[in-house]
Structure formats: C-alpha cells, structure tokens
Image (cartoon, rainbow, N blue to C red; front, side, top):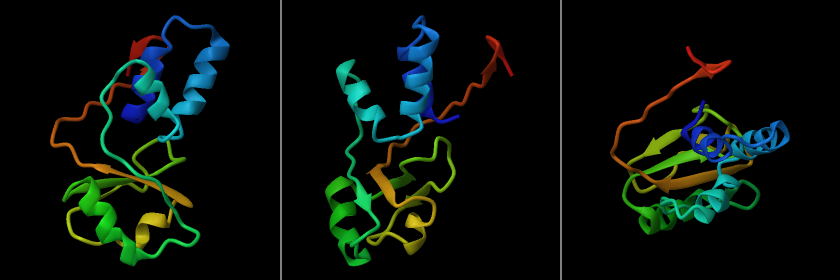
Length: 124
C-alpha cells in the first residue's frame, strides 16, 4: 500500500462506499492524488510528468536539476512501490519507463516511511 493511497483514504474516511472506491482508484494514479492533496492544503513535493513517447533521456539532467539533486521516480499507475527508483546522479536510467508509459519524478525527501495495512478495520 503506498503512502499516496493512505493519504487519500484518510481524506475519504467516513464517506460512502462509492466515494471510498473512487478515492482508492484515484490513489492508484500518483499524479491524480496531487489535486486532492492541494484541495486540503497539504504540502506537495516538486514534481514533473515524463511521457515515454518522444522522451529523450538527454533531457533528464534538466529535469533532475529543476527538482533537486536527488529524485524518486514513480510509475504513475502503479499503486505500490513497484518500479520506484531513487536517482542521485544527473541522468535518469532507461529502466524508469519499464513499468509505465508515464512516470512521476519528485524531489527526494529524507524522512521515515511508514506502511500500515488494515483489513476489516484490523491492523495486519
């Protein structure tokens, strides 16, 4: 379960079953969660979308320097950690577009990450 999913699920707590399904589907696309977070005045990392078609890896140096010197690159439609890559250098690796046609590079944040899985309101 991704942190994106958890944040969106928390925002939809107490909502109808239909709204919870919609928020879950939204959270599976990391970029679609951004407007939800903004509407609640939550802080967002600097980010940019990369589309596989027509993208040249030579452009990656400009992208990384505009975000920060370290970025996390996430496939847009994967709802978990699948395909995530931390990039510390000046160029994105070719493998970043292996899992999705669109990826989301974001500024790297040095902090702890917590994953809490629940089933039927019970922690697993």
